[in-house]
Length: 183
Image 1 (spheres, rainbow, N blue to C red):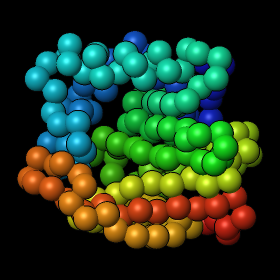
Image 2: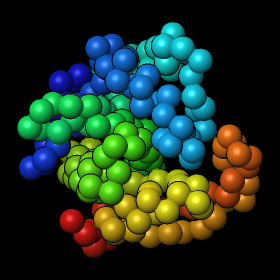
Image 3: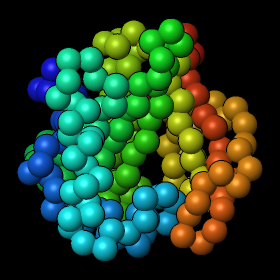
């Protein structure tokens, strides 16, 4: 199952591999992309390797529980970011998304395009009932992306994200298979 590729006109999502280590390390080392991330900036590339090895292993099993995709632009195959879909219990038929886009590509529609690809994959291929996302309340860019694709803000978790500048509240978003989606 490790050959999953999702495509739109401008981007491709493919499962990550060890060859993505350097690009992922650069992404995780950017202060701008770390602002709303709970991982923190890695001290070295070995720390990044320890983070992504389980992500790669998760996609090499028969029944994938956690998908981690590299986002590439079709025209030059340049790495743009990461996108994850973590599967919940089969009984509840839901998944949770997360993404991290290189700051050079913010405000260019790549995140929205990637979310729409994952929503298609989640609802059409994986037959999920619900896809959810969390977002730090100060992360205006992600809030806009989630709302532009048709996700509904359901609530606010108080002080649950340990960010570098302290504990942050988190908005909870979701979309159901029956909800109207926006492209």
